[in-house]
Image (cartoon, rainbow over all chains, first blue to last red; front, side, top):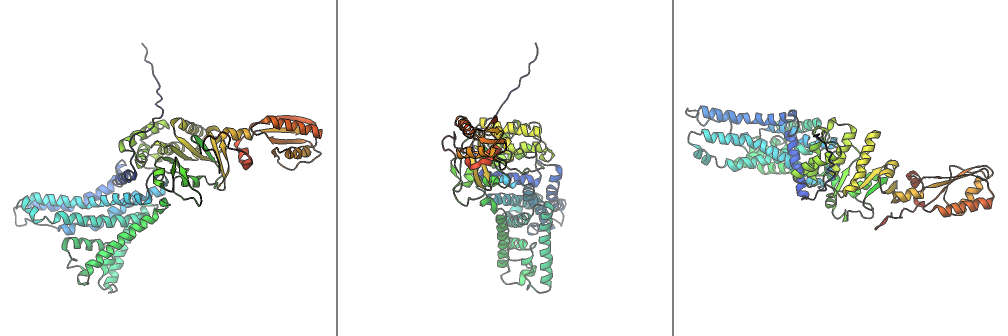
Length: 294
Length: 297
C-alpha cells in the first residue's frame, strides 16, 4: 500500500470574531511598547541594558537587607544605608534607564517609517502619545518601585522587633513610596519621550535626554552658586526638580538641608515647575504626532 | 467606486497617495466629502480606518522584529484580540508565501519578502477595502508576477482593492475597473474592459491624400490620432479610435474613402490599451457597465 500525499489549499478565511475599538488599539500599542522597551521577543542584547540597570538599582536594597539580617542580633540592628525617601529617585540610574528605553519605543518607528501603518489603524495621534507615555511611565514606575518593594519586604522580614512592628512603624511608606515613584515616573516618561520624539535616531535621542538633564543641572548649579537665581537653583535643575517633589510627598515640605530651604514658597514653586515641565513635554509630544489628527 | 479590484493610475505626483491619505482620514479634502465603505470619513475617521488595510509604497516595517510579530502586533492595533491576531498573522503570512520565514527578523528579508509582509499587515484584520500603494515596486519580474497573482486573488476573498500604480500593464492585467488621475484631477474612470474596447483602433493606410482623409474622418466626428501633421498629397496612415461599436466607424471610413476617391492600401485593427485611455482621457466614456452608483468625477 503506497502512501499518498495531499495538498490542501486552506485559502483565505474571513475573520468574523470580535473587534476592539480605539481602547483595544491603544492597549495593544501600550503592550507592544512595553515589550519592546524591555527587550521581550528581541535578542538578549536588547534585554541586557534595561534589565541590567534594574539589577543595579536593586543592589543597594539587597545589601541593606543583607546587612540588616547579618546584624539583627547586634547593636547595629536597624542599620540603614539610606531612607526610603533617599532611595526613591536614584536619579542617575533612572536617567540612564529612560535615556535607553524612551528612544527605543519612538525613534525606530519614525526612522523605519512605521508610523503610516500605525496611523492607518483605528487610533489617533493622542492615542499614540497616551500609549507611549503609559508604557514608559509603567516601566519607570516598576523600575523605581521594585527595589523599594525588595527593601521593604526584606526589612520587614529581618526586623528584630518582628514584622508586624516594622510594618506598623513604616505604614506611611506604603503610600508615600508609590506616590513619589509615580510622580518621578510621569516626569521622566514625559520629558524623555518628548526629547526622543524630536529625532529619528536612538543614539541622538538618548544622548539628548541625558545631556539636557545633566546640562541643566550643571548650569543651574553654577548660576545658583553665582547668586543669579536667589537660591532657587534646584527649581531650574531638571535632575533635582522631581526630587523636590519627592521630598514634598515624604516630608510635606522641602528637605531642610536643601538649598531651597530658605526660599519662600519653594514647595509651591517646585510643584509649578514640575507641572510646567510635564505639560510642555506632553504638548511637544502631541505636536509631534499631530499629523495623524488632520 | 465599485467593489472589486480597482486600479488607481497616474504618474508620480498625480495624487494617488494623497487620495489614500484622504480615504484614511489622515488628510482633509479642500472641498467635497469622502465616504469609504458607507462611512463618512470626516465624521468618523477612526471608525472608517477600522475596516481598511493600507500597504504603503515605502518601507514601513520594524526591521528587528520577526514577520510574525510585526503582523500580529499590527493586527492587534487594528482591534483583533491578541490570540486571534497571532492566528491571523500566521494564516496570512502563510497565504502570502512566508510560512517558513515568518519567525525571522524582517531586516534579513529580500525586497520581495518585505513586500509580502507589507501586504500581510494590510490584510491581517480582514479589511473590507485594501489600499495598496505600488505593491510591485522594486520587485523583479518573478516577484511582480507573484504579487499580482496575490492581489488578483483578493477579490475572491471578499476584499475590495484599490491598487495605486503608475504601471498601466499591472492594472490592465489585474483590475476590473480603472481610475486615472493626473495632477490631482480625474482623467477618466470606468471598467477596464470598456476602456480597452473604447481605445481599440483601426489603422487606415492610403497611398496618397492622407491629410485629406484625416480631416474628412475628423469632420465625420471620428477620433483621429496623429503623430504629426499630414500632407495632403502624400501617402500614409491614420489611426481611428473605434469605440464600443466598430460597425458605424467602418461604414464611415468606407464612405469617406469612396467620397475622396482615395486608394486604400491597408486596413487593420489594433487592440486598445490603458496608455491610450490615459492619453485620450476625457474624450472617453467610462461609465459603461459601472453598475449601481456608476462612475463620475
